[in-house]
Image: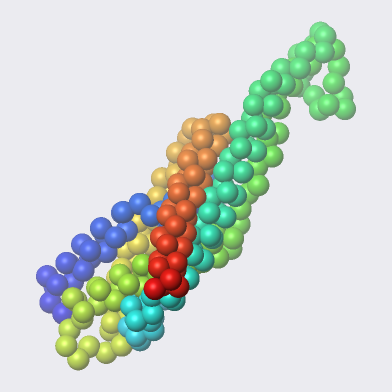
Length: 248
């Protein structure tokens, strides 16, 4: 493979990475919970992309070209999973924002005279209590993000078809399986990983800088809604395709 050909491959990988999709939105959503969870989601998505590259190189991903039924079924599974993740994100965002709203209405509890902050058990007349920090926020673990990232990418058959279309364009004649998976698939997966890490670190940094649970809640709400829309699209196209196959 010439250097110019490899740079062309990197260009294609960059375009694939920066196009907003389920992997980007998932990494963003988990990064809002914690940096580790976001990095876990980025890692899981990239590992799954590499696995798709291996499946494409060994010919297993070609099953979706020869069997439309398998493609539509996997699309249905992937769409349903994205909708589930989106619903969870929206639910978490609503709980976060509701807790913040409740906390702000009780931010200053005036009980009489006094200036010291105290716990509810030791409140005296005039104590001022800031309960904005009491909003219950579930911190997702890195393992949770890793599994979600892998499941999201592995249930998206379009990734397998992408590698099937990509490999013939960049694979040298008589190239070994190791070269195809390691160099071509590894380059795409690594490019995707670096981009997702950038997204996670950017979101995490902005989240810490803003330090506003309400803004975080709105971002989480939008990312969850986007995941639901993407899932609904996969579910609709998969269901329509499956209906066409069964009625043909």
